[in-house]
Length: 243
Image 1 (cartoon, rainbow, N blue to C red):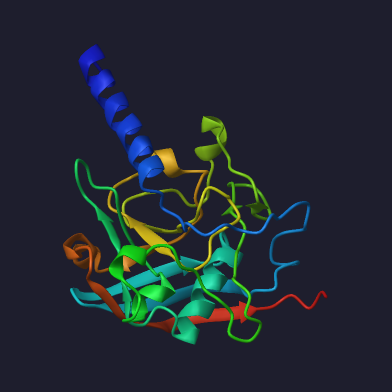
Image 2: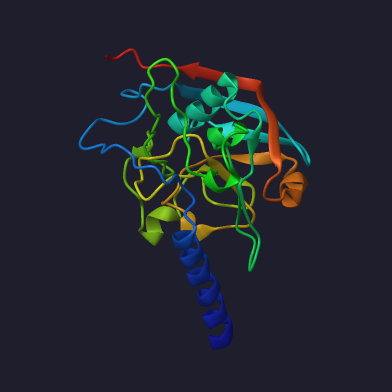
């Protein structure tokens, strides 16, 4: 690779990181400090996914199917399945679509975007609030390396050697959780990678991929809707019994 090509590649990489910093993938709400609390399925108050799940999404541009990985991301995938079954994503808006200057992400899943009383300028700032407890749901960053028995929780992985060993990476079509600057602030918002985004590996939790309908994702524009989401295969959830 020539010097000019290397410089151009580095330029795009830095541009994506700047873009990520200026228009963050995550929620703008502050997350509670996780401190030294135990994390993962054994300590979670939210369900974890056992095995896999296939989620069918009806969008205003056509059907999409997601395959979720409960082996590599049980807590993150379980959270998503739980929210799908609660109907949280029905009627929400794809509030952030970035394709220029290079393909980046299609993001949606803000529960507040389904409320016609909420202005579009506020989309992207909401998360899931449990109606039973009135508490905002937050899940920790979950990353699994090949060869590890269990995922790692709560901390970003920045070593290039380690990120190359991630069980789930930001390939084109990867589905991952959006969050704020706090690694443990993911809630309901998610995004689909429009191209391989290795600069996000180890920073955001990938939990599945688009298995059908990536051409539909490519057509989605900002303001399009996720009309309905439902689990059509798998989706076995397990809950910790620990107090």
